[in-house]
Each structure stands twice: as structure tokens, then as C-alpha cells.
Amino acid sequence: MASPASFLPLLLLLLAAAAHCSPLPQRCPQADRQALLRVKQALGNPATLKTWSPASADCCTWDHLRCDEAGRVNNVFIDGADDVHGQIPSALAGLTALMSLSLFRLPGLQGSIPACLTSLSKLEFLTISHTNVSGPIPESLARLHSLDSVDLSNNKLTGSIPNSFADLPSLRSLDLRRNQLTGPIPASLVQGQFMSLVLSYNQLTGPIPRDDAQDEINTVDLSHNQLSGDASFLFSEARPIGKVDLSYNNLDFDLSKLKFPKELTYLDLSHNRIRGTVPRSLEALSTLQTLDLSYNCLCGPLPKLHGVMRHGCKPYEHNLCHRGAPLESSCHQL
Ligand SMILES: *[C@@H]1O[C@H](CO)[C@@H](O)[C@H](O)[C@H]1NC(C)=O
Image 1 (cartoon, rainbow, N blue to C red):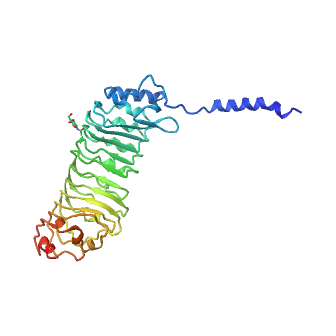
Image 2: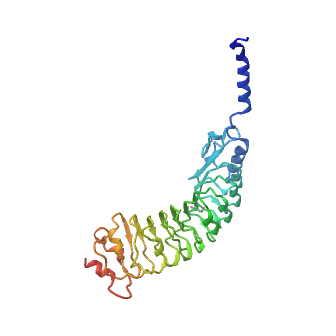
Image 3: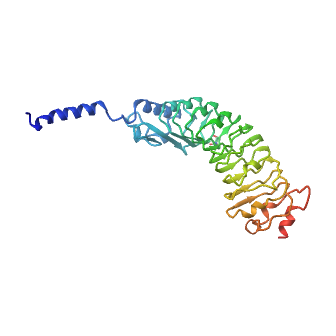
């Protein structure tokens, strides 16, 4: 019978064979590296990306990016660089493991958002913000079903918000503020699953699409547009909502009977055409920090304990009451 020791060389051989069959995944595969080098070239070889060098084999050591555990580039962030010039490189589409792409504060970035970004099927976080990127938001972006957060704020985007955005199953935060977007807000975009919806400082028109879901919403900022009609459905005792800014629109509805959710911390409805009286449910809002109902058509009297002590009379100023006691004077009498 053979001694146990004689099995040892065989065992080592087997182990070596096993290791050979399942090699560690290669860090920074050639395709990722080539894509990055093409991105750098398309952005005018900026000094900001000097570590992105053909002389360096392992791109996971380069600045402005991160790799996942498998050694694939999953995060690219290029920000605050004046020396970046050109369009959003289509070579970015080659980084197929990308989960997060951030192009932030790049004044030299221009042109439109390329439709080829839709090949980034794992993308969860997309930021293109504070750039000179213009043109429409590609409808096809909504094919990126993993998208969780989209920030395209502070650009020069035009056209309307694609209807397809309402179908994104995981989208929880959308920030399109300070562009030149026109047209209506797509139906069912203001959905309960939203943690944050910021569409302020555009030229959006039409009504706020009605949504009666009762899920929690953190922030709705639709201010500085030309939205009209009713927004009262946003408020319900049963739906927690934290910050609502609908100021500087053409909203026209009766505020009198609204039941504000007690979670409300920020309410700005100023500069609209809102009618009725200040609802009594305001009395119970102990966590409300910001209140502005000025420049509307509200009438007095104000509910007792409504928070004049905390907020003063300023939130009620310049209301053009059409029927009943003027709001402002009833405030000053308290
Ligand atoms: C757009 O380009 C102009 C002129 O180059 C620049 O002054 C401005 O800061 C850029 N805008 C943004 C948001 O980067």
C-alpha cells in the first residue's frame, strides 16, 4: 500500500490544474482601457486626465474612476475641469460595466447627449450637470432599466421630458432643474416611488399629472415653470411628503380644505393663483420650517395657532382676495 506522502505530488498537481482552470478575472480588461483612452482623446487630452496613459497597463489605478471587484471600470467621474473640451464621448458606451457616470462642472462640454449611452445597461447613477450640453434628452435613455438617479440639471437641454421616463422601474430621483425644457410633465412621472423630483427653472406647461399613490415622497420642486391647474392631490394626510416647492407657476386651485401631511417641512406655493383660505391643517405642522403662501388669491381669516408666531406675516403677503376678508390684515391683527 502506498504511503500518504506519495499522494502529495499528485495533490499539488491537481491544485495547480484547478487554479489554472479558474484564473482570477483580469483587472482592467483591454476593452475598458481602450475605451478610456478614446474618451480622453475625444475630450481633447485634458491634463485633468493625465493618469489615463497608454504607458500604464492597469487602468484601475487611474484617477477619476473606480473598478469593481472583478476589475471592470464601474464608476467614472470627471468634474470641475476647465480643460475638458468637446462632446460627450461615444466611447463611453464601451465601458459596459459602468454603474455610475458623472460629468460635473465642465463648461467646455457641449453638443447633445449621445443615444449610445443606452448600451450602459448597468448604469444606476447618471449625472451630466453644470455643462454646456444642449439638445433634447434622448428618449432611449429610458431603456436603462437600472437607473436609480438621473441628474441632468444646469445644462442647456431643450425639448420635452421623454414620456418613457415614467416607465423607468427603479428611478427614484430625477433632477432636470435649470434647463430650457418645454411641454408637459409626462403622465405618471410624479409617482409615489419618487424620493425626489426636481424640474424647476424650465418652461414646462400644462397641469401636474395627477397621481393618487400614497407612497412617501421626499421632495417635489416644480417651481419657476408655467404649470397650471390643480396641485391639491399632492397633499394627503396619508402620504408623507417632505418638501414641496410649486412657486412661480400659474396654479389655480382651492386651498381651503387641504389636509397637509404632518411630515411637511417646506411649503412654498407663492406666486400662483391659489384661492380659498389657509387650511386649518397648517396648525398641526410642528416640523414646518419654511412657509410661503404669498402672491396668491387667498382670503382670511387665518387659523389660530397657525404658526404666525414662527413664520410671521410675510408668508401671507400680497394675496389678492376676491371674496371675503383680506388675508394680510387678518394676519396683522393676530
Ligand atoms: C458655457 O460656456 C460659456 C462660454 O464658454 C461659459 O462661460 C459657461 O460657464 C458655460 N456654462 C456652463 C454651465 O458650464
